[in-house]
Image (tube, rainbow, N blue to C red):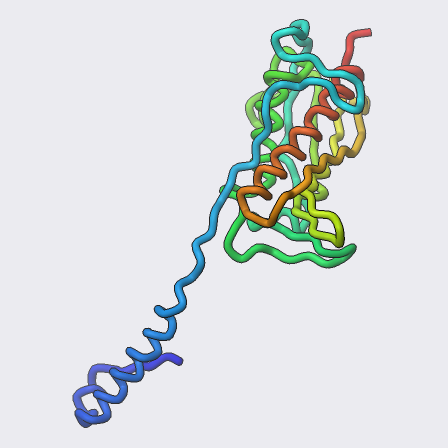
Length: 225
């Protein structure tokens, strides 16, 4: 309920009526103030930098790997709805989703996927240099990624963080560019509870799994022949 009083009307309003309006407004304000809005939390999506072993092949730490070859550019990531939302997305059934009204990411998921992938590949990837889109005009390899799933999954008997990303990598030295990697990867991490911090940590672990799997395949796909 909204009470609007213009200044001219106020001068003509009897005192008793004015008192009633003021007390009513105060009562309404008291109702809303008596129920404070819960404070939300925002988190960054990130991953560690040590590759380690993975289900698809075996990665090697950055200190052990040979010097990379070629230049790679990582294009801006795309994330499909509803996972493009900054709010945490909960999947409770095959087609049942809900968004957390208070907790989520500090930045759009697409931006964080791009930034973290660049940082990861700069340290762990098979390339000599890795840039973001717009930094260089040409590159030996071009990496595209589509975030297909980024959520906390709460199903009967299962609670886990799920990250699923499709990577598409081309060798730009060929004409037309040659596809060297076209694969979808999924990472999961069990969730002990529904606490926002637990969900954020689980998504980070799942994302790191995806990056490890992708890096192992990318190393094979771009190895000099």
